[in-house]
Length: 364
Image (spheres, rainbow, N blue to C red):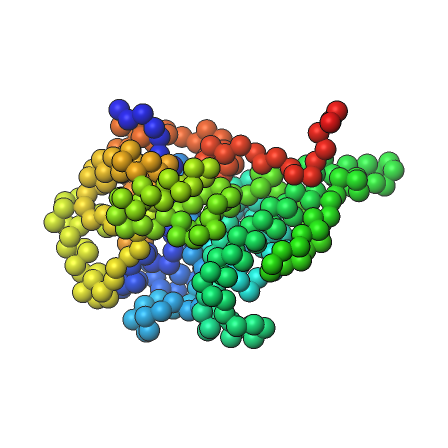
């Protein structure tokens, strides 16, 4: 038995992380542009009691030409659409920060938190290319350093806006006609390098207080996020990333190709790479579910990460094996919970409810 339970999230992007996945997946290509496609995989992850699913997004089309899936749904809107049909799984869309106002990010993610009854997160990423900037025509693409610094500022602003309504700001006193207590709404009066935001938000404080904020671990400004996902490709680098962010839950990305035998997994990997040669970011695993269930706790112990962000090569194939065989093996080893113990994503991740920065403590 192991001493610590892992946190596990899973990517449900398209037909799988491998760019050739759509050519071997049982999923119909047209289904990739329906919310039902993503609901299917979110419910599968929920049945396995995984902490959360992620859905990637970008302001640019996928690279690789006509041999890869091109086009995508808006991740935040898609997860908002499936939120009422799920009950426990955390929902973490990628949201680009470079050409999106933090006020809009704040209200949109807060709305997802309401739609999911407290299961929202946001994976904040910059938009660094000239092609993305050209969609808007308002300014050139930022440098990598400026893009990351702006993302950090966005995370600061959106948490302030979530706090701009105190939890009990809504009074709904029908007798007096008083719906809110105006004294419990606050201006954020933020002045930063990239933004000037007055507030308050137009959306009441989200059910979690703060939805979970996440960044990738290669960001130099990741300090302050609740969740850091490192895409380091060897254990020493993962260990270094985990040490950099002692105040956050750090998860390591692992791309997975599974089969009932090692040779079967290698054959699947060769088939995919023959169609489209590809080197995924992060750690890679090719093998059996039992081997993956043995490796994950060992890697966590060696690196100090709290868990893993798993990227199935092909959907539904690798997610089916993950949910049906890897998770039960982890449970048998004491490395993963038997069932959800809370209702919100912050509870799944062992994060306390965020304290409101503007609320006045009684008696203070």
